[in-house]
Amino acid sequence: DAGITQSPRHKVTETGTPVTLRCHQTENHRYMYWYRQDPGHGLRLIHYSYGVKDTDKGEVSDGYSVSRSKTEDFLLTLESATSSQTSVYFCAISESHPVVAYEQYFGPGTRLTVT
Amino acid sequence: GQQLNQSPQSMFIQEGEDVSMNCTSSSIFNTWLWYKQDPGEGPVLLIALYKAGELTSNGRLTAQFGITRKDSFLNISASIPSDVGIYFCAGLFSGGGADGLTFGKGTHLIIQP
Image 1 (tube, each protein chain N blue to C red):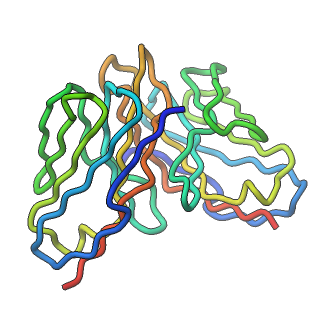
Image 2 (cartoon, rainbow over the protein chains, first blue to last red):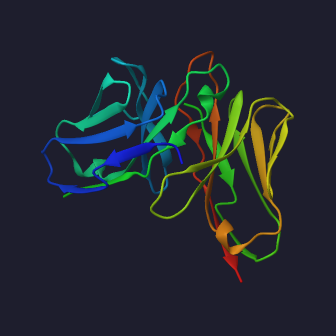
């Protein structure tokens, strides 16, 4: 298994509160990603990072921000959580390599419920 | 944005049967990946395909990158109970570096003993 951990694994929060999810990797991979998974939508990219302090938006970035101050950590923040952000969030990583950069490996997920 | 159509949505099969599923895209990809996800866990990479026409196997699994670069197929031979789960295709068209994958909505495989 790729060395990826996510914390917390489960969280219940109230509408309007800030929430930060953490992804930690021990593989020293360059690229990191945040996805959300919802019934009927599959997995959708929120943000990704191509190096320390280098991030870019994905398909569903509204309402989310990210930060990467160290290679091993990628944080996803919901500034003011809404019920539509109830979802399972997955972190993924991939290497810096001309070919296998496209092979992404996923963490165990964080189940977030916004009440 | 790019869209992937994955079919079938679900499959009910008998143990020992072969399984086939596919994904089609509205645009071309230069990478196809197949993942399996078990309940409560993250997707696990099964097979990666990088060239049109490529056929790659991983044990009882075989996947193909379609010639048109708009489709991919996954076959599972002689299914066993642990094959149960959701299978996702994912595609990527990238000019360099790494970008987010576009995922199909999954094929839910259910095996009856």
